[in-house]
Image (cartoon, rainbow, N blue to C red; front, side, top):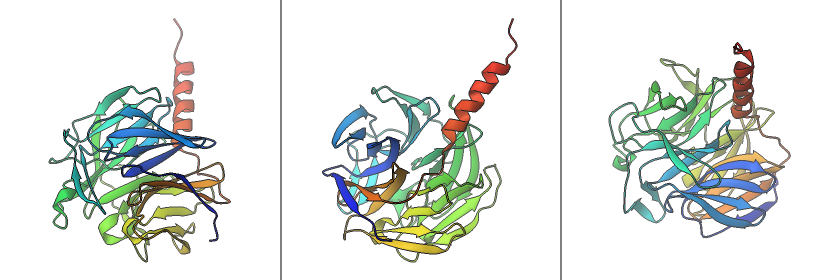
Length: 300
């Protein structure tokens, strides 16, 4: 795939979780910075301090950002980083004007909890990965995929070993999860007790965050491989997009004819021009469903 790349921002402190908010507006987290930041038409500013280590973000049906906070840890080209003040892993709600509140702090499974990435489902629930004690690599324990209501009622969906990482719903309404240590993207039904199967395998690099376009193509950040892979609608490799050595692309999102990519190694936010539209995400549907429920309530 021949693409035109644009360097949008530099000097970021382990950027992750890009979230498209509109033309040339992308929110993202900075793990080592303990904050959520916003790229807005050429400039970057911090919008909220979350504490700990914000690891992923997605936009909710209420317009706020929902953030996985791993508590204050990252591993990268600069070695292990631990926050000066750590917190227990949690899911947070962050508004664009800087309000930060906890959504869920009591997560399933044995601690430590290291929530990594998240997405909304058609059911209005927030699905997230928790790779568990990834500070113990390579002897990491079994991770989890879980889901929560916005009131904080959390439920285990599946136990997944070998570092469950990126997560997203596909056009088939199934849940896709990156299993980093096996270089695979898994697919499963979004229900407790579901058994995941392999959807595709990266030829090189380790799958981190990913996103789908409207045609069903899958864009996967290859992290330590300094590569981003594009898979066709049935899991076959379609393209390889190379990044600079040591850049470590961590996650991506589509919007306004661009693929926005966070690179943890170089501390960059980059954009690639692509002829693709994003797969519509569920907050829009969840908002419509909530509105329909309100309209259906009997009036007294």
